[in-house]
Amino acid sequence: MRVAQRWILKDASLREEYLKRHREIWPEMKELLKKAGYRNYSIWLSGTDVFAYYEVDDPDELIKTLEASEVRARWEDYMRPLIYLGENDIPESLEEAFWLE
Image (cartoon, rainbow, N blue to C red; front, side, top):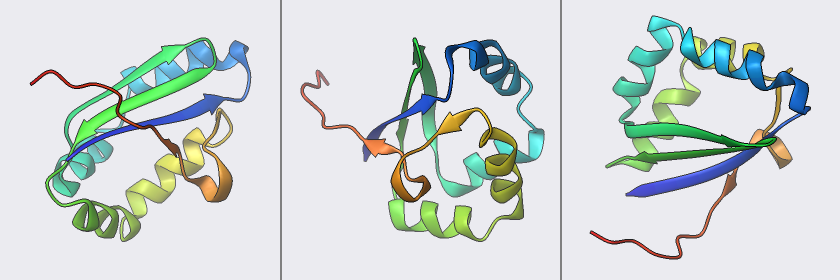
């Protein structure tokens, strides 16, 4: 399954800090993402818009693994001052318009 999502930087002045935190992502967070089943995960910025793309075989297992993780909770607390995820802290899911396999 391919997934694309969008969230927003709270202010354009936070862009460099957002980039820095991802360049220095914690090893335990990287390990959690792999354990949860993320593949080909990338994040892109355009102004204050943040776009993510990833692939996953079992979305339910991904959610279950993340929700059970203390590492995810710490990472979200660490990033929350920089970003607005959306209602209920859930990123906006994007509709696929085209895919060339």
